[in-house]
Structure formats: C-alpha cells, structure tokens
Length: 623
Image (cartoon, rainbow, N blue to C red; front, side, top):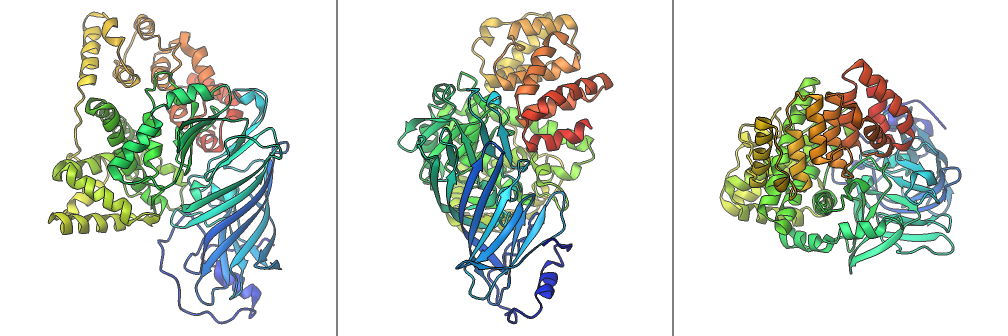
C-alpha cells in the first residue's frame, strides 16, 4: 500500500484515493496545537489519547510482533488519523469492532520516516494497527549475553527520545501530544520486562507482564527493557533495578534516592508519578540517563563507588516535574525541558549537600557551556547557541548540547538572582501546577512568566531580557558568575604545581570527582611526556574506574600522545556507549591523520556495542 506523497499533500491525496466514501468535512476542530516540524501527525483532525499495546518480544530473532490500539478524539467530519512510523511493517489496520480499514504510507524521509494515514469513519473511537518491528529498529538495542554483566542472558532496551518512538510503536510522535497507556508483553520466562509504567519486581513463570501508565505522557517517554534483572528497594516508593551482579552496588550508590525525592517535593510540589524506580542498564546505553516516568534509565558509568556522580539521578528526578509534567511543545523548545531541569537539579543538590557543593557544580557547568559555545561557533553553528532552536529539516538530536541545559539554567538563575529566590520559587511552584500534564512552547513560557511576575510581584520583565537570552546567539554578559571556594583550593594546588612541579597529595586526598575534573580540565595545553607521567602517577588517572575522570584525562592523552594510556583508552571506547564520553574522544582523535585512522580501527571493534543514537553521530564523523 505504498504511495508517494509529501506531508503537505497527505490529506488531499488520501481523500482523493477514497473518492466520495466520506461525508463532507465540518469546519469545527479541536483546540489548535503547536505545529511540530518533526511529526506528520495532524492532531487538529484526530488525536490519540490512550494506547493499548500487545507485544511478543522475540529475543532470538531480535524482532517484535505487536498490536497498537489507539483511542482517539477527532473533529467532526474528520476522516483521517495520521501516525508517525519509521521502519515498521504495517500488516493490517482495524477500526473499533474489528472493521478492517484502508491505509497509506508516505514516501520515506531519512529523518522523519513515514506518515501512516488511516481512513476512519465518523463513529470511529479506536484504531488497531497490527505490525512488526525489525531487528534494526533505531530505538532498540539488542545485546548478546556477552555484552551484559552476567554474560548469561540477552538484554534489550529502547531509547525513544527524541523521535525514535515511531521506530517501535506507530504513534503521533510529538512532545505536544499526550496519552495514557496499558500494555501486555510476552518475553522468555528467564527474563523480566519493564516499561515506563507500573512494573513487576520479580520474574514470573509465564514471562507475561501487564503494565499501566495512568498519567498522560508524550511518545518520547515510551520505554521498554527486557533482561535478567533484580530489584532492590530503597523506600516504599523507590527502588533500583539492575543485573543481579550489579544491583547491590547500585543500591548503595543511590542510597539517597528517597532523600532526593523528598527534597524535590519540598521545593516544588508533590511527586505525581506514584513510584520512582531506576534501572542501571548495560554500558551501551547512549546517555547518562533517560527520564522515563516511573523507571529512569541510567548508565553504569555513574557507579563511581563514592556517590559522587548521583547529581545525574537528581537531574532525571527533576525531569518528573520539568519535562515529564510540563513538556516542551516541540524540539525547538528543548531548553524548556532541560534548562528548568538543570536549575531544579542544582537546587536539589544544594538542599542535600550544601551551597558550596552546588556552586562547584555550577562553576563546572559554566566552563562546559563556554567550551560548547566556542565549539559551535568554530563549526559555523552559531545559530545553535540560541535557546530557541530552529531544527526544521534537521535531526532534533542536533539540539542536545550544553546550550539547552546550561545556558537555560543560567538564564533562569539570572531571574532568580535579579528578583529574589523566594519569588522565583513561588513562580516555579505555580508554573508546575498550572501547566501540569501540558505542553508549552517558548512563546507560551514567556507570556506565562511575564504575566506571573507582573500580577504577583508588580515586576515587569523586559522584552530585551528574553531577546538577549532566548533569541540571541552566544552567552550574554549578564550571565551569573558562580563562585566555588572548593574549586579555588583546586586552583591553588594547580598553581603550585605549575610554579614548582610539586603536588599536594594531602589536599587532593579529599577531592571529589568534580574537583578532580576541574584539575584535569585546567591543565596547561602543552605538557611534556615527563609531566604527563608525573600527573598520571599523582592522580592515578589511567587506572581510574571513574568514567568522568577517564574521559577528561583521555583528552589530554590524545593531545599529548601519551601512549602508555592508549590501551586503557581503547578498552574504554569499546566498552562505553555513553555519547557524552565518546564525542570528545573521537572528536580529538580525528584532528590528526594518524589519530583518525586509530579512531576508525577502534570504532570498527566498538560499533556493535553502541546504540543507534551513538552510531548515527560517529558514522558521520569517521566516514
């Protein structure tokens, strides 16, 4: 049933193909939604509201057979439901009581996939799509037993953000469209299935699991993982999933999880998703974390053994308010998800570990932000230093940079500092309450905050403030400047070493991961082989088990051709799938012909361990 048509001609063509079998269209439509350049869906005609998903997970063939049944709301006279798909095989489509209907597929777009246009009737309330998911679905990574910690059973997980949900579920794949869902999933009885929904805590003999997500979510928060997994409770509403050999270590690392939840609630209101569980995935997971409601996905690279990297958990927890509860309407508005979340994350960490600790993190964030801006400008991507992005015709993953996260954070911090924290906290509480389970674009945010500050505080926020921070390139001169007494001590130790070559091991013995990172990142650009060896002996960087420290150190290893660390770096690149760490290392290697060939050789070994999100980036870089 494949036909060639563009998004703009979609409705006209399918109506022409069905000729006069539908009644005349009524002009009445639902409330308008933001137009999303990354979705074929037309929610003003017909919008999905609830998903019932039934699936058989075939780990032997790495495929899925499924039925996605959607409850819909539509305007009067609507005759078309449009869904997003990519790579799926659509078998049949039925309406309501098993009435078979016709459908059409648009021509393929390399980024967006295809539109699935389904003919509906005036009385249609449910649409059931029977389909299969291929082994190479972009959202899904299938791991062999050898790629897991236990080495005994296979493992799989999905990563739907930003627009990859359409590669395993036909859906209206836009963050502006929310729905509830239930699911029935069949897996081998040696494995446990989990979703971004209510979850089992142990395997059953049949390998059959039922899930419910009663709060409406956007499609990018659909998540599924299947593996040999154990559960360890932290509190009555929070716990840790991980492979059996990892779960105790993970539970120890995240012992403060309940404190984080309670601290977040004390700041900005009740946690509205019932449970907060976290699963530590195998190393190929491409991100630090993914805020899937009720089941955060996390990288094992945060298991540092000293609880020093748990700010990532605070970040994903904060998404339960900013992102999951109040969602960016399109990926051009990505900063609304991430800027608010980083602000919230810093406030959680301050509440739990003190002002000095959070200021240390903010100082490092500002350093990273300045580096990102310099890199983007160097790549002729200055327009991507704006908070409000223009990603039309581009993959929304292009917007996943420090701009959305840290420029967004410092913008919100500026408002807090200028007009007072008490006022800003009151604003955030109202913001999350008034916009709960809704999507918001940048213009909507500006209107909301201006109206709030004017009405509640008699403060007029100027248009120039928003123009300077949201719609302009680079970092404004008004950017807040965090002051970290902890990092000042690191700077003193670094200055001493630069002056006389002596290290202060007594002071360094108390350093956290963040202090070590500051030390490494501020090393001189030119280092001799003897200095690299002395630094390595001092910090024991090459033999570190901390991924953050290893990544920062390996950048210098590459720059200064410190061959002693190359075997450890190669092992790290092959066995770590987190894009945050891969990007600076491959990016540094390709700067020389010798380094690029070395990177290609490593990548040939490492690529099978990476998720599509990572390979999509590095295939372009290395080919």
